[in-house]
Length: 263
Image (cartoon, rainbow, N blue to C red; front, side, top):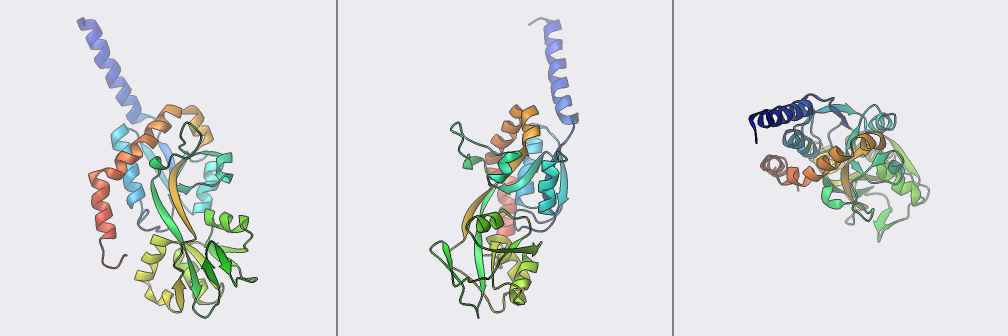
């Protein structure tokens, strides 16, 4: 390689990495309440640890926007943010969003951010039960869920009436305790964390042994962003497994989940 070609190569490489670092940041929206252990504060939690790892690995910049979850979805639909952190799959969201998929069009679960389950909580003085994938003795009772959570759609599609005015797990557990609702469906880890921190909310309440649903959470990009940044989107998705296995992630996971208060 001649000196001129060599200098051109160096210049091109420098410009490439410089442009990657100074390009318009990718706007990511995530929930403004604690969703333990995935979101524990501003740019904190296991899901955010994955994003920070990806930024460093790919030499790109993310702009983090923290809003109520329903507002995050509205911002994505209107193009004000580029992606949602920790979005479960629903067919409704595919109208405006893109999930990582395999060549056959099926979800690529290896590129998920994490998995969590939804647990059914009932009042001890209620005869409502969740068994073999259906509610028993539900009657006309509404099922409490957090506002904007996809599990509400799952319940409605199954024909169950939904109560969804609570933003946090604590608010929903309080509604259950005060008999505003007699049954509620909450994410497992955040609800356990809430009950450990506020044990009074668990008085007179029991968790059903069978989960309502196991659910994978993804980094969901908008169709607009994906159309203009297809290669970059796939690079980001493909870096997620590395982020989950990274030393930083594993150390934080041990710190958050190693507490004797957490099952």
